[in-house]
Length: 142
View (tube, rainbow, N blue to C red):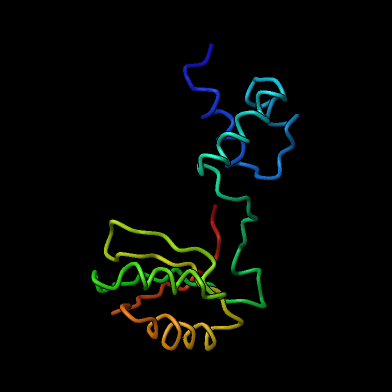
């Protein structure tokens, strides 16, 4: 018997393939389909699973440019700034960070020029955002 918990096995399958059917997850995690459904429902309710998404190779996506943007935020304006950033359509994902920057955002736009405008006008236009440091994604390796 595996020392890896049922929850961990189910999450591992979902992380590898978010489109896997309950039957496929059950087979790969060595549990029944009703068990898969029960765990997924519970993990969604608890906020462990927050969504399902497709993985994109930015190099093959000719219609968009993607950047990971590290942002510094005035600590007194942090809550308001994060609310405003989450409202921006170009911000696909927003993360807190313990690294060089307080926040990391995945930002998408039509091309590099548009992406630069989004960063300089929209991100840096949010009250409390004091700096934005983009890293433009070029090719997905894994």
